[in-house]
Image (cartoon, rainbow, N blue to C red; front, side, top):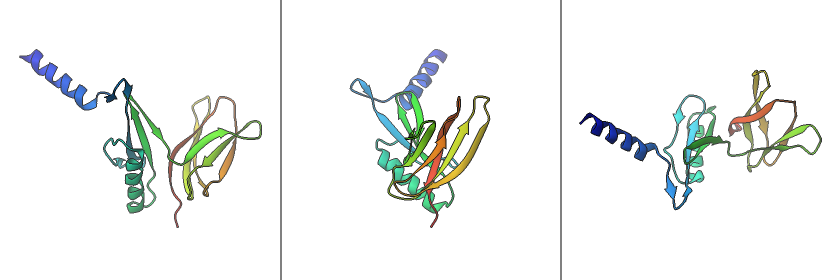
Length: 151
């Protein structure tokens, strides 16, 4: 009897939290997530746009909270800022953070060095503009969150 109840619990967990498949490929699901302590703002939804709308509404109702869209493909979960893109700069030894949205955005950007120290700051970038950073050896620049510029 005990083995049966353990099997039921495991099967239930697999059904609730296991990967979602459509055909032979994993289907992506999206969640709006507050990085300032409120946690998940939506359930896993099938459209990035649905998660984005929930995140924008949260930002509007709780001024100053940063949020991001998390993506789940199969068993792998990752967070993806909506308006940020980091690419190599036109000048050697630089990185460029681009604002791909049609509005002003404040990005929370961190640089982690090889020894594990990290510096974080918030940067305002107007619509369709960019900001350059020096490319340092063994350092990683990441966008950790974003929010609309305050009016």
